[in-house]
Length: 227
Image 1 (cartoon, rainbow, N blue to C red):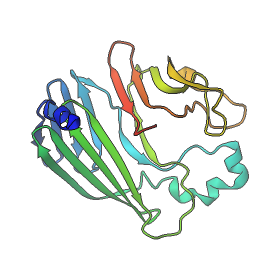
Image 2: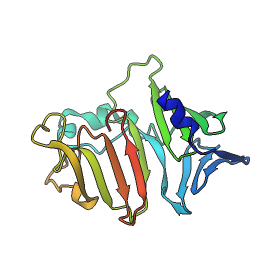
Image 3: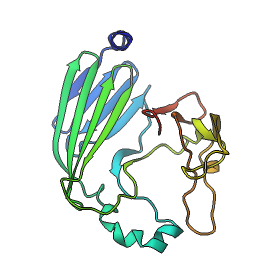
Image 4: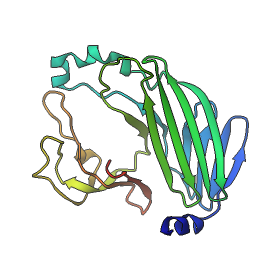
């Protein structure tokens, strides 16, 4: 009941459409999707663009020293360009009501013979819920280095705050000295320049993350339950 009241109280969402794109807007918030790529190409608030490059499916990460030692770059190479070589099979928009629009993009990952579904639930409040569903289609495949999305933000979005383990970098196998709390730092300070390539800058058990320019404007990213 509380969820239903919350949705009912959200602003209405306007929809406009051309042959190339879908535009959704409500007050100072506007979001655009490309019909050709199925991707979110613009996310604006008060005429300020927050996306330099669209969030895209990604299945790769830079190999670490240990990865080279166990042959991961060779064994898992089909995943390196699987995201960028995706083929859009379908793009559907569903106006659930005046306050909610669902968008579903279906891709064929030609390199891996798999299927990827990207579902966006967009509300007039500016909240966007993203679900990524991966189907290997019955093939025996090597392990996937990483499943997620990669995007580029404006260069002045350099202040980061998070609710999770910190303040220093921590990982699943070495995190108990890093206590859960709210921490703030800069993007540059997240990195540690190891002598040989290693994972760097990671934080575990993160509930939410903000990235902003220090001018009272930015993005809030929330996990379900963790990022």
